[in-house]
Image (tube, rainbow, N blue to C red; front, side, top):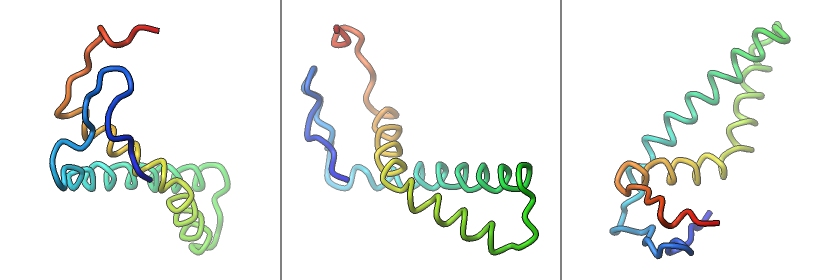
Length: 92
């Protein structure tokens, strides 16, 4: 779950200040809400299970399995609010 200290191409530091990624909790919450809503709607449309336990178990399992992806994605989205992308470093 650790992130690199700096970008390999441009040298941009990812840890801008102590507790910088505390705001990423809000992005992570929004991503989790979107995930849980999507899983619920997909179950409802595709399978329409009778038991509520199926919804609960499936949504919790999907949240746990995708937690590492959610953490890194929320940090990446959050840092892009504050650091702009520079195309000159995007040379292949």
